[in-house]
Image (tube, rainbow, N blue to C red; front, side, top):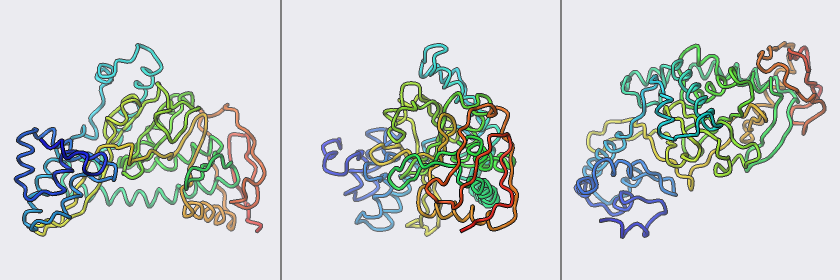
Amino acid sequence: MFNNRQKVYTKGNTDLHNLLRHCKNAEAIEYMIKVNGAQAVSLMATTVNDAGEIPFDLVENLKVPDTEKGKIYDILLSLTSMKKLKDLNTPLEFSEIIKEFNPAQESRLYRNLKEACRVANITRAEIHGSSTHPSPKHNFDEISQIEKQIKSIEKSSGFIENTALRQLGNQYEVVQVWENEVVVELPQDIAYHFLQSKTDLYEKKGMANCGIMSFIALKKLIEKNGTSIPAEVYNVQNGDHAILIIDRDPQSDPLQPKTWGPHAVVCDTWSGEVYPLTFLNEKLLTFRIQLMKHKITNEIGVFHFLTSYNPNYHRLSYCLSIGQHNYLPVRNDTMLLRLQFAVNKLFNFKTTFSFQTPKYLQGIQKEKITGNSHGLFGPPLQHNDGQQVSFLNHRNSR
């Protein structure tokens, strides 16, 4: 009924996007639902077009009375809320994953799906609270309380993370520059220590959102397999989500998912989804939070939307890699300054930091790195090949 309007507007539009460019009243949307079915229109309501818009974004510009806008918002909110996730603690069933994707028995893809399911279930069993997960178990007040607790953990974890970053010294090598990101390669034990510092407190408290849950899943994968199965945490840019990618082809372009190979698997611990990378565009969701004032009641509401992934608008970017490469992206000047400040602060005080290399990372061949790598952190530090890495009484000589 509405298909003849599809090409008039932004690429990636659904019929619902197109209708909302000129919609006069809520009855037009109700009629679309009657003709197409609520499930089909719900899918349109959560579809992101190539400009990053969902239909909800188009309502404000409609030239209709506020009372009519309020009715339209109410319909769209009910449509977006139809997209459901497994409850945060509901385990994934590997038998269902195998049934859906039918990988060859004991193939590499089969192994990766099985490992992704395992680490997702361990992580989901540990994390019982998320301020962004649309769990039916929590009301608004409970979600607000979880958010406060997660913010408190972030503050405490940030101090621990800075301590880990201080240990970088000059033990890194700039390996590539992607757009505004400088990607540094770290010694493997320090990369793992960084991962530990980022996750331990969240695990103890049992609360985290998608990013930390992906980091925890990465740690669980390494705890069993060492680095024999490469894995990386990726962020969704122009959206708000993070996922674990398992077994990407190391020769592929890390910013082009279509090159990542037939064995790569997506482990989305937060949403409770595990699938081959070939289903990325179809299955990946992005998270969005919307604060709005109701046009009729004037009530302030906070709404969580689960929207589709659009490869023409969204982009996957590195967050952390441990395995064949141990990459940490430095995304902007602020992060560079933070790293430099953390290291310089350490060097200006008489301080000792040390950590133990986990047993499953011991015995891995490490290259001894000395010398000043691009000079970001001042005087060179030497990476010890022994089990313990310690920076003792080192001062900035500049």
